[in-house]
Image (cartoon, rainbow, N blue to C red; front, side, top):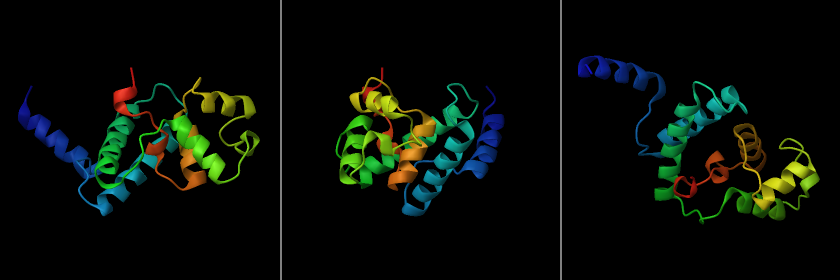
Length: 140
């Protein structure tokens, strides 16, 4: 491995993405914007060349959230159930996420949210997409 080549590639990549640990609100907002843009491009694809980048950006956001915002440790289905309750929504009120049976499976934990659904819910409820993502330590 040539470290000079790696350094040059990293500097070019960093100029394009500003990927680094998030240290302030301005950078946090920029990373959330990048995550939003990536979700638009990736959609519901299970394999996409930018999926690893989305995972990295999401982890940076998650790390900043954990350090700066007191977020209760809740699963994505618990967060969805809470937000639906707070907004007085029924399962049929979320067509942008899926039909009533899909919502039922999401709420029961039988199905996980995909990138498109996370994006739709984050936009609907005006929250960070990270609240709908499984915590790294709970994934297998």
